[in-house]
Length: 69
Image (cartoon, rainbow, N blue to C red; front, side, top):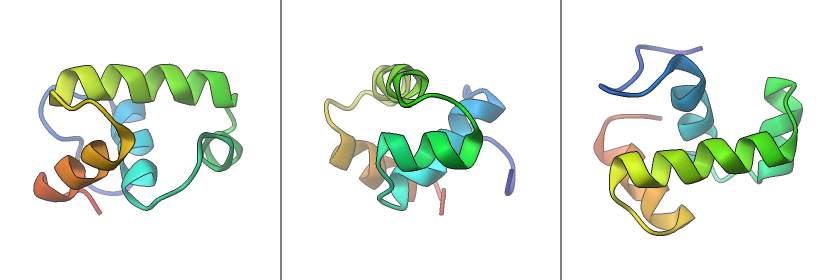
């Protein structure tokens, strides 16, 4: 994993967030992290709740605002 996790996120959530911010699909993220696309979906849903956003694009924008690249 690159860098530290933003406050309140687990290291895995931070990894998923970085890849969502880069525009990868759940399938692509799953392949990189060796987890299922469904697990990525669960992480993404949890991230949306924790970040207070309602869709994947807003998640990516929020990630960039947190300095996640």
